Length: 186
Image 1: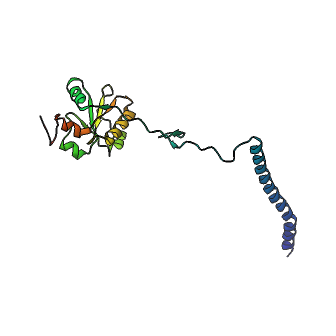
Image 2 (image 1 turned 120 degrees about the vertical axis):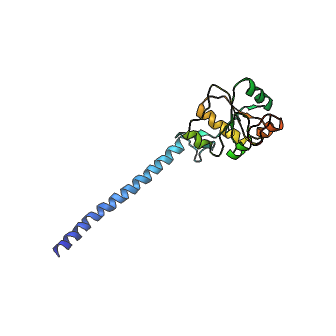
Image 3 (image 1 turned 90 degrees about the horizontal axis):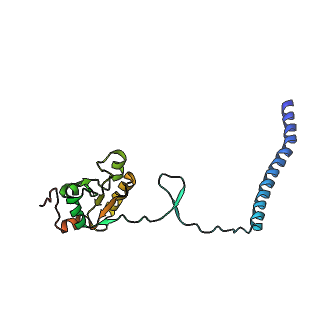
């Protein structure tokens, strides 16, 4: 019984101190907030922040970069590529599927399907010399897959010599240029 009385006395003694500590903490927080508000008013800081431009995280970096649409890679015409294949060595990269590549492709082209390009470039070494111009192509004129693979190669090789075939494989075949594979011509 004597222990219970001692505990009761201790509780009566400590309770006011705990209440004082709690009240002091609340007052401290309130004073801090009022101080910040007063400083903002004195410095004429707007209550609503100015709108910031949209930003996205830069690939592989912690800092933020403005979201800017990159320029398209330079284009090369079918006639120019046809001439360059014969006169000046150029690396040609087919960004279409493996099946499309087997059906027919520009002679000497390397198959690098857009769907697998990032993982292939991360895990394999491709026989692409950086001292030559590189031309990527896909099926059609907009060249979305060719642009994508071209950007990957440009970033991976850092050679800044990547171009996209204007009009894609359709334009190549339409111009009567030579084809290897199941659709093989001249």
